[in-house]
Length: 177
Image 1 (cartoon, rainbow, N blue to C red):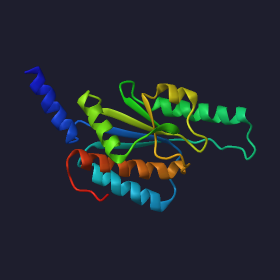
Image 2 (tube, rainbow, N blue to C red):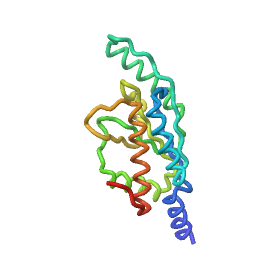
Image 3 (cartoon, one colour):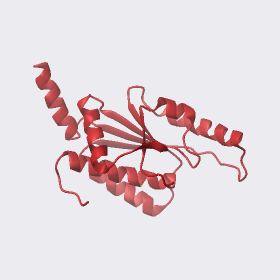
């Protein structure tokens, strides 16, 4: 019976009924086109999972900040990020040095997390300076979308699109390639 319950739970998780995905990010979005895109993907994802986007305040970086000042800024932003991460969540930090995956590999990884009962997944996006060492240490894994650098505000939209694509792939639903 225990095995049957796990299979049923996995089915529900795959269908998104028990999945809670949070994106914890530094900074408040101001660009209307990004807000519109994020709202669209959040709406689409509501059929698959509970999605939260949590913003924490960013720090003003002086124009000619020293390395020490930049580290202090990342630490302050990192403290705010860590305060928003539930202790029982599986944390995936977005970082240029993270592991790159295809959309299919990303979908398989989300499915694998569901299989092992990781129903709370938190993606962390740093500010313009990146993530602090403390946030990176808290991360269970790191993910990179490219060796290129993207604006951290844009990464929210890219991430949501890839999460949506992953759910479609995992459910065998059509989605353009």
